[in-house]
Amino acid sequence: MRRTTAITVACMTAAALTVTACGRDGANGGSGAAQTGAAVSSGKATGEITVWAMGAEGDNLPKLTKDFETANPGVKVKVTAIPWSAAHDKFTAAIAAGKTPDVAMVGTTWMGEFAASDALDPTPAQIDKSSFFEGAQKTTEVNGTSYGIPWYVETRVLFYRTDLAKKAGFDAAPTDWQGLKDMAKAMQTKAGAKWGIGLQAGGEGSWQTLMPFAWSDGADLTKDGGKAYNFDSPQILKAAQYYQSFFTDGISDKAAPATPTTEPDFAKGTVPMFISGPWMMSSVEKVGGPGFKDKYNVAPIPAGSAGSSSFVGGSNFVVFKNTKNRDTSWKFVNWLADPKVQSKWYTLSTDLPSVKSAWQDPALASDKKLAVFGKQLETAKAPPSFATWEQAVKALDTEMEKVTKSGEDPATGLKSAQQQADSIGTGM
Image 1 (cartoon, rainbow, N blue to C red):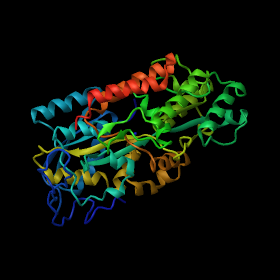
Image 2 (image 1 turned 120 degrees about the horizontal axis):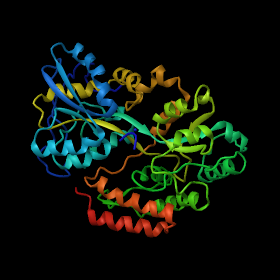
Image 3 (image 1 turned 90 degrees about the vertical axis):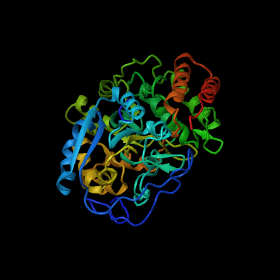
Image 4 (image 1 turned 180 degrees about the vertical axis):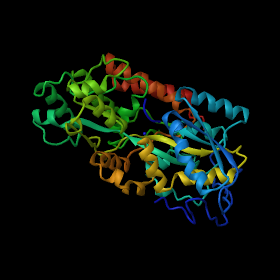
């Protein structure tokens, strides 16, 4: 989820799907059976559908749905905006009561939980999954079955002050782990920074900053054929040791405030580097004032032995099994994946498109900083779609806080996180 990130569809028009015969494969196969959603009828959408969406997306979505209603006369899309803080409980209550909306925006890390509840309708076969960024598409898949589409995406990259980097003796962004550490240290010793790089000192969501390093070194969050958690792998241990070194060496602040002051610290140069998502560009430029956009740049996560990787987040759009208007629900979801619609949504929300070809739109293609995010998305990875992910990863966050703030041995911390994850299980 965000803020703690030409689709080729066989026989598709912007308003509807022209469908060939394809039934549901293994629809009654039980847990773990790969399924294909039943075919959607041809022709225009009809009737009414209810849609739930969260945060700013929920507020902005009605501006977009008017176009779908215009393309399908007589159709009504009723959007309900829900605060992120209340969304998870609202969904789980609706699933338990059998009173879900027809369609909804769903956080990527909730997919396993909701699919395990047998609440989601498998994606129809005629949607071409290869049109999306691979990591984003993976967020829709549970036990080999895709549910819905990736709607918008985000990933994390390195933000750095180019002016202070030059003062520290660097003309370009670091490309490997040692280079990042060298540059961060030089920012302190030569450019006057208080801290070389702002890294999250454990706590909720800190795994999203740790794992890009681990993935870049070939880590996998699962083992046993994707059936179990894998928090204490050699690759994650190596990344955790590297991550800890920034705090033990005094390059990052182990006592950073619970409420981050990233933007003003970056603008003042007291913390001239950090790792975050695309929404931070407008935030730092607003705080930095006129001309600040020329004082910083973004770069891919410094590479490990497996190259550069990062976390892919964002939100998906799903259709619930209880829908009373399945055809129109899927036609609406499919319409959201049209490249032109995705490009327009970017202009309304600044949410980055999940459809690769939508990045050819001049609004995105002309922005060199956004292009870095687009490049990073090609290799970005998602966590496993286990039903218990949100619960299990808390153990990893808790141990990383001990590693960064108290100097706990990373091997001990990861072993503890693994034991807790094993106790919780995958829920699948």
